[in-house]
Image 1 (cartoon, one colour):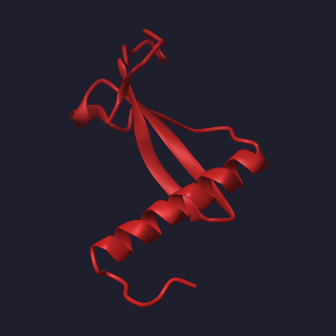
Image 2 (image 1 turned 135 degrees about the horizontal axis):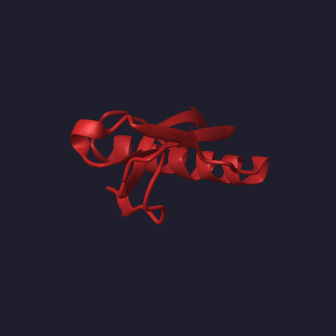
Length: 83
């Protein structure tokens, strides 16, 4: 997944795409890095962290934890009763 970059040039290079490069954290907070690139062969040309408030980070961490939990349950990768 990617979006078109609203900036036409970064450090003298045209980088038309932005995509999520990395997600790390847990339900208590999440860090996300965005990559700007010209295509797959140039993925690491420019990257930066997404600036979020603590509340936003916790809300996203909680939502991602729920999505991952539901996926693992639906694929029978974890078993047991919800508690």
